[in-house]
Image 1: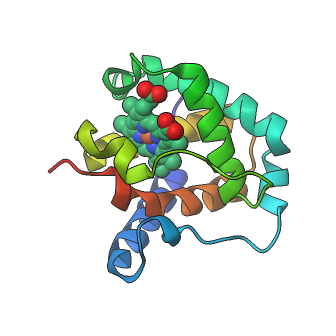
Image 2: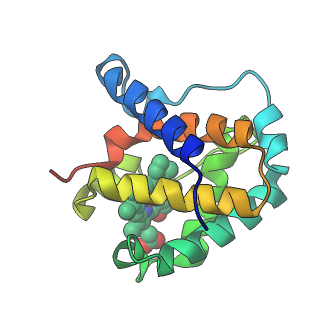
Length: 154
Ligand code: HEM
């Protein structure tokens, strides 16, 4: 699916903003808690996020930019963990349990381009599920600060 220019620009702006403020926040505490579950509801609650993460992981496994990272992944586990994580950061009633993001991704040698590719695949999934553009950007803004824990490649 072709990604329009506007989402790309907004994504770039989001990442640039987050990068510029990187030194101001701790790694895992940098996710901003939301005051209510409106964003979670816009994603269809837990069933909507479960469907979204199912589609997302299936795309990650086949996308030529990300398949080398995900081809040996434990897909059911990854889908469940991502669902809990997006539920949590969107104000839903979940709490991701598991290792810290930095520990999970430490040895993967993930570069900025890999991170951006994953975000674009997520945008494909969100578009396919008809998530409103404003909600997509709010979710991306919640996830973007995690780049500090995840990008370790030069
Ligand atoms: C905001 C961006 C990201 C988020 C929120 C995220 C989140 C997660 C979560 C929740 C897990 C499961 C951890 C567990 O086992 O409990 C995981 C695992 C993993 N992530 Fe990420 N991740 C992100 C970016 C990336 C990127 C950019 C890559 C590579 C291009 C990547 C590759 C992986 C791989 C390979 C696994 C292990 C899968 C498995 O074997 O089960 N992640 N990630």
